[in-house]
Image 1 (cartoon, rainbow, N blue to C red):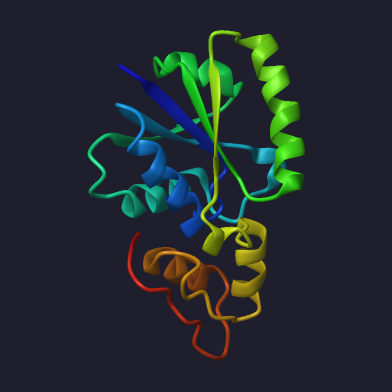
Image 2: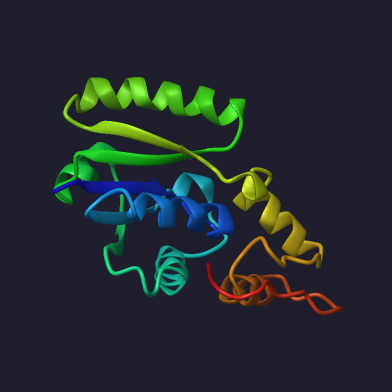
Length: 170
């Protein structure tokens, strides 16, 4: 049985994240999406809100669960009984950062394998940081985040005009 963990801050979850979750879930028996507390980043959404947003987005994926964690990612993966860490890659800059983290994680937990999935081309430009900036400025989020995430962003960044809401779940 292959148990994997896809860790991240998910502040907020995007269709890029959902793309990796759906594809990773098809490759493993069990997938845990680990929502990292990460107080150093000062996230827009609370830990509980991020867990809820991802849970709603993955509804219908029977082999995927969502859990919050703090501390070392490799310790969380061990706690979940996992042997595989899933990461998504968008561009060269992602590769450099992921490579650096992979070497450290390999030193800390040589039993955990890293599986990097390339983001589908239509989501390569998405980042949670850019999504928050677009939402803050009242831009259209269609095709970038699920409807419920766009609504949550609208609540965080009320604007005079209407913030466009993306279409459905992935």
